[in-house]
Image 1 (cartoon, rainbow, N blue to C red):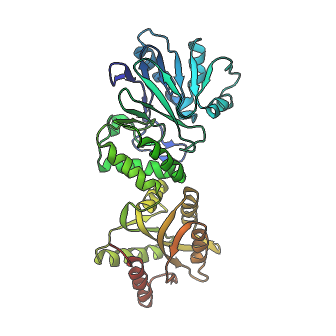
Image 2: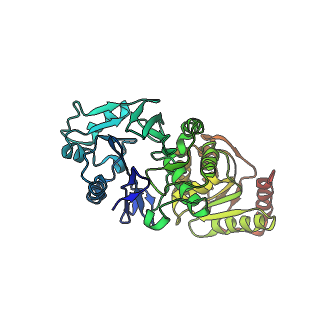
Image 3: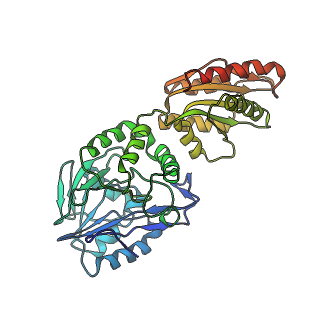
Length: 396
């Protein structure tokens, strides 16, 4: 069933509550939405399709919203399969339909569909080009690597709408998280987790896009995932400005702990106790058991981080190694980090953590490296307290 957004614009997207792992890696307990739009003006344009798993439902929404009209255009902002899976079906259904997309997106289409013919069926657009639908005119804005190279977003001056592709997206089906976003913690938390795990590596490109967006009178943002944003647009853009700058959003310490038999976790809890007693905001996570995407989110959110990990096979306990690898590929930078290692006979975790952090930009690893042998003892407390004091240096 479609939803009327204005006289000529309809929402035809669908929720997916059966998806357990978005992109086969991100836990989505509230599902995910695949957003799609229909502009019915002098000419009719479909803005993006959906994932194949919800294709039949989406086609019903489309047919209902068309009310007998034949679509002229399919605008493809982004070629990732959760937004483009129905392209071949639409070309087969509507012989006069023309695909409007970046040249790179058009080049990608045959990679996803067997025996598809695009002869005379495409219109390549670049930044500044306009698709004139009548009263609605879509101005295209290049957004390469937000978060694929072919991405375009579009701006409709008729109602001040930015069709933002994956930017400003959020995990969660609309049935669960609401159709319209509100500037509250519910949106921010899952939008933050989405940003740093899906888009976050490409902060420079996001900032370039933000610069272009700020030159336009944006009154609403319609992403391809999550709620439509119509209130407090400045607050959403401000959050993206912070996130894309690789600077912390929250003053405090994220403590990430990978403990095999509980001894390392004792130290992590002691550090949390000391820091909280000094009025420092903390978040402690057992990264062996928690959602790694949330841990990546908190690592970027907080200004400081302490890593506490067991040694393992002459190196680093695998959950911590996996976590640091995620931070490496997502562009973690501009942070202060303290380290705790545990080892019963040959502590090695600290060495590996230092090596992995050393590949990240402007990450300051502070002293001391706290080394615990099996279980925390009274003589370990001095080094633990010193680490807590040093991580707090400059804390506001």
